[in-house]
Length: 465
Image (cartoon, rainbow, N blue to C red; front, side):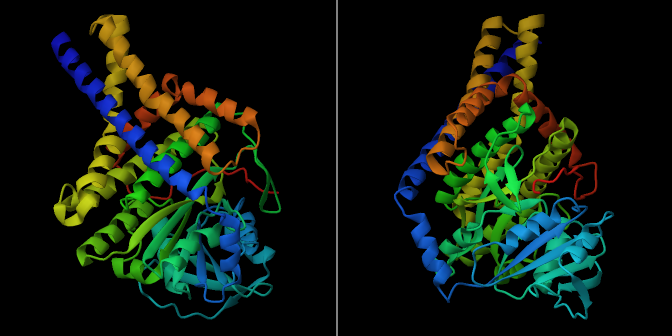
């Protein structure tokens, strides 16, 4: 038993060192991209596009399921967006609360006759409403079919060549859509998808659907999610986007070429990771066509969203995310290590399999060996000690680098004390937060084979007044 444990120890140590070096490599790429971007006058360039009459019109799709607390705030923030031409479509996917009623009352909506173009099959559309105050705001009431089905219904009803998908509990900064569309316009359509940064709104002062003062929450659980988002967006997505091998555009905020999405078959209703699955399918389509079109992450446009404050809700969310990752990799397994798909098949897909998915399994074994080594002499305590140090380095120091990168890019947190608190909690990650994430991610792998796909519930407090 001890020999097996020792062999596993060396495998896990080697794996964590490899993963740490991978993250450091991604950090170096992201840092290089950040230095280049910081030399540009971003405000001046977006103002030019605001006055440009050739800017593509955009349909904003807001899928909503039991979002009575936040949906009106989200739509208000979309009304304030600096963008020449837009339409806002809220899709109520069979909510059991007052989501639709809140929309109808707030925006004086009336039922209108409809004939929806069925580019993509969806659950039954029950009614469509239009605002008498803002005619470009519409509400779709439909039978429950899941988030992917709701988005597909929005795609069918949308009028414009590009659509922006945003969660029903989120708030976009005023120039967020313009910044996301800017690279698409500049590339003359060569960029078909862009994704912005998602930031956690808990602890910030938000009034009239606008972030008035950025702050930090008191809850350590939410603070660690902020650090985690830094790592995922500013290291992972920025670096992978630079190499044109980005596989995830957040479902909370992304802009898509509608024609390409319809060509790919729309959102997949049979997975809980519909956002990642669509992006992978689009990459697959582009590679099979030998197209030069790209998918990019743009760090500057920011979408604020409400994060889970309870361990129960956070657990459900992370199990769902891990399950979505596994489902996507399995559905597109023919791309794995396949030269036909270039760097997507040879690097990005293996990276998400071995680092993002199976990393939880290796770390779980590592925690088991560390515990067994210190308390039950399962392995030499020195080996357990080395593994413990590698684990701390793997989690906490990478997260601390992510906090540094946030300060170099967006400067969203105005006080030095904010960054100091985030640094402190980042360094504690390996001692409490990461083991929880590892446990739930492992459960997410097993959950893939057990449950039917569904939205997932989260109790909202609301992020705007």
